[in-house]
Length: 468
Image 1 (tube, helix red, strand yellow):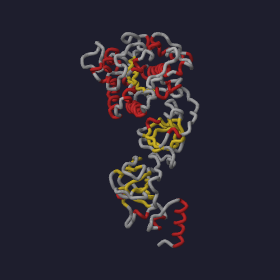
Image 2: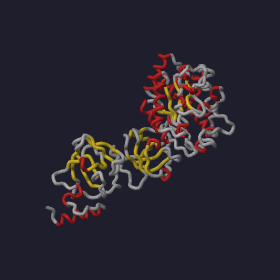
Image 3: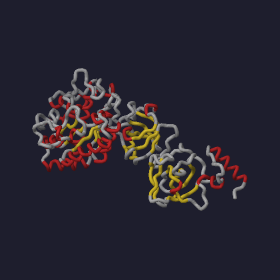
Image 4: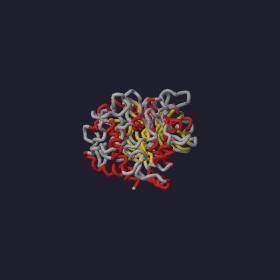
């Protein structure tokens, strides 16, 4: 039996901690956290006391948890309690009726924490601060030392990891997070709660060797064993190692994209090391020209991801009856690599995320089956109010899950005037004289010039990383 002095001490401690004890709560039980065990085979641990709360992780049957409080107003589904596993550290809200407590325990004896009680991330990192801008990872996501793919990976966060956001880059496409340590996350792969624009702009750390738009490390990732396997398959099928295809919509079909490089209208400036990859992919005629200047059978104005897979869109007499444009281009050109950027028109036409992901998966599978390394590119921003973050998230996710190269064109446009976009808001900008093959600082302020430079960096990385 608790003494009156002990009861007073408990009340004082509760007051200092800001904990409200429910009327009639057992002071003895309030002295310390209560332990319980999990009854079902698996039990979702949620970020808020609601069946719609974000799932932070799961407890297995028999897991022993420490229960430290309850929601303030019980809902129709029962009382939610805040728990932390004794082994493993996962913490969050669960329904009390899925827990086995000791004999005679009354859940209403727990102190009230309220719906605002923080839930630590699944990996045991820092708790997001109440009232701050927070986010949850939508999939496995690299936590990097800086805002770009060229920065080192500090660690990889699991899906549904909750993080507190403390800063952003200028465009808001990368955010700085605090998870026991400070790092950066790609915004398109987060579900954000709060206003990103309210975060302070944080200066990026100095570039690492090979990082930033001026080097391949900043724009391409994922050139590994999977790309090499696809290349070797393509060689067995008769594909040509020094040929690539261009796949996409008007941003790809435009003569501003790579054509100047194919006809020699290029000035590399500080990027002279890229001359070797230009020479490599210029020596063979793809169909009507070398790969840079070749007319693609799978790139046309207004096309969505679905048009690449629609036989009715095969406009060339070179294509067979019932043949998809993508397959036609690969069969006729027999490339080793395909630079694929699609999604701008999908976003503008409101193609659903599930549908876009399925189409992109078919494009990737078709390319791989035909021995062509598919390099997936993120799409540029749309300045007409169309949010492209979902599509870029899907593009990055598909590339990551398939172990394929990702070309981060969206990130390469950061800091350019008007985000590298032209006056229409959805095509990249051109330099004043239209010369997109001149890689000097003034010309690289244009979106198409930056696209040509980063395309060469991507080809160089794939050539050296998968075709050798």
